[in-house]
Amino acid sequence: MKDEGSQEQRPLRICYFGTYRANYTRNRILIQGLQAQANVIVYECHAQLWHSIEDRVEQASGGWKNPRFWGRVMLTYWRLFRSHHHIPEYDVMLIGYPGQFDSYLARLLTWWRRKPMALDILMSLYLVAEERGLTQKSPFTAKLIFQLEKGGLKLPNLLISENSAYETYYRERYHLPADRFQRVPHGADETVYHPRPLTLPTDTFRVTYHGTYLPSHGLDVIIGAALLLREQTDIQFHFYGSGPEKERLELIVLGENLKNVTFHGFVSRDELLNGLAQSHVILGVFGTTRQSHYTIQNKVWEGLAMGRAVISGDSAVVREALMHQKHLYLIKRNNPQALAEAIGTLKSEPELREAMAAAGYNHFLANNSVKALGAAMVTALRTIL
Image: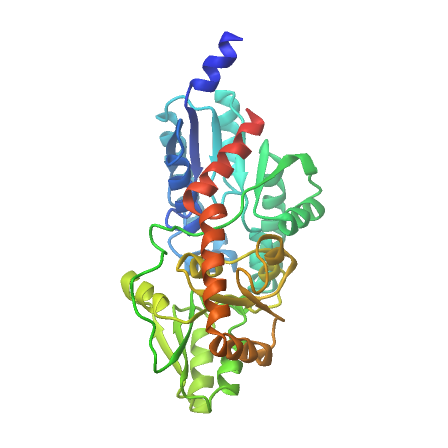
């Protein structure tokens, strides 16, 4: 009994491991959230493999066959091995996203140290490649990604999923047992995304989209709503970010001569945050792909964290965590008319918009903030200790 008590009082030591995207929201939130917990120590063991999104797309499209890429892989994992050698004693290893391929080296290292390991899956690498058309470009690469992900998911003692939909997908696709999973939801960094003391414009009703321009996000729906609302010149749409869909969307706006749409591109963080803070409504996603249905995207949580009303596409996953017209406004996906009507409703009913923004913000702080997610992860990790 004395040993059990001392074990409880000793800090939980976590090795956060892998070639994970160091600047990606999920990893930053979890590392900060774990570090914010009392009696938790985090050791980061990281080596960079991917240079950019474009780099990952190039390799997944067949570029991995180049011997120079394999040289980079071997060097990266050697560095990761050496870094791990210098990490102090820990209680559990947590592989950051994306880490399905890192599981192979991680399993060897944790066997060596006789420690359990967990993998934060977040998104399926195969499903992402499939929905971006990469599996069609290179079917052999698709099979390789599938098999590597399948093997990588079978090695950890614990798999962290965001929600029940993604968990079901993994279990059915890769034949994984239910007791291997624990859930830690997604969220946003409230030290970055939080209400700012800026006055909303009174001469225009500002609607904002921010993030990557991807097919799964359904940006044609937003442009379609802008077309339907073009005569209401006081409603203005603002786009921040970039991505593969941006050029095509800009051509549509130019061809239709839409005066109510502004593309800002990539801007400084302060400019983006000021733009969000001065928005009456922040938009989520409206696509119909499986990936868009399986997760609540960063931009939704970031909009709630800013204390703003959010409109997003309806799904079972969203309704698991948030309530329609209480925390955010949900509409039928791939439906510009529904989005236009929702914008009109929130414009004409400021009381609903403000109540929704306040409730959404409070829900975010309690369940999806940095500290809340760190606490959820600690609870999940303790199940394998």
